Length: 117
View 1: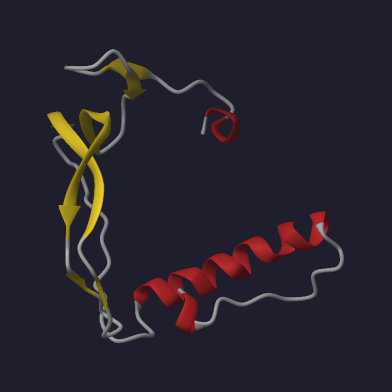
View 2: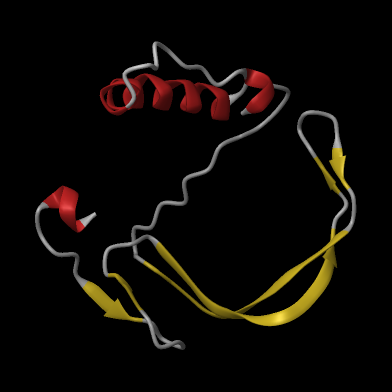
């Protein structure tokens, strides 16, 4: 981000852990993961009609949440495909295709089919 803006990013200290984060982010979730600590999660219903069975996942221990006064939580609403994620992905392909073609001349075009987004 600093490279793109051509100036350094202002950082601030976290409240409960020894890290710095960008000062202007909307939300910061502080915490830790204990190696080897797992708990079952699920089942989760998916918007495509399938579900993910119960599986063990690492546990995140939340120690603090901080946010800007005017914080924005970006989200998408999902339903039966194609939905927002497909159209956002398609826009990203159009934006990045010229860059890919410069680096990989053999690329003629690319797509993200709705079934894979």
